[in-house]
Image 1: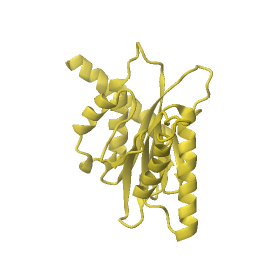
Image 2: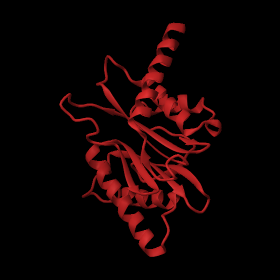
Image 3: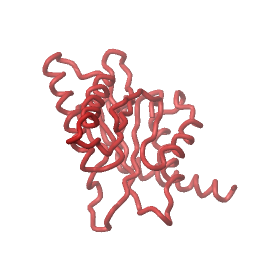
Length: 213
């Protein structure tokens, strides 16, 4: 989500095994100090995309002396993903990617989404994954221009709690990262205590909705 004071991304990471350590197999990765990506789909396909974004950001910084603008990161990643749809010996990447980055020129954090085809768009708020339509409907009800990233964190946790089916889905871990004034406009993981607080608030809200409904 693009909020009034930055960008925040949240992920519902299903826990495939009770033996996994907390924080394993992250779906939100930092690609430069000012940018990060999150992805939905095959974990093994998401990591090469993160590596490509990291290399592109490093090369751009070495050549021009500034951080790579958000729209260029999205374009370069999109071109790489699109190339894998053009040849019979390759298969398309099985991931959709969200890119959050700070634009040094406009002094604002931006959010882009890249589809498996390589097409990319800038969004105020977007969702990817199997329940993206339900999540998108909830995001559209929010007034993002008046939300702070801390409020956005709670709303993302609430949306994930709404679309998560405790009977059909495995337990999940809530991952979140932000680029905002609080993080000094760097891509950082949201502290665990804030994520825990957001999930507890979200569950209480969903319970109240179910009781009222």
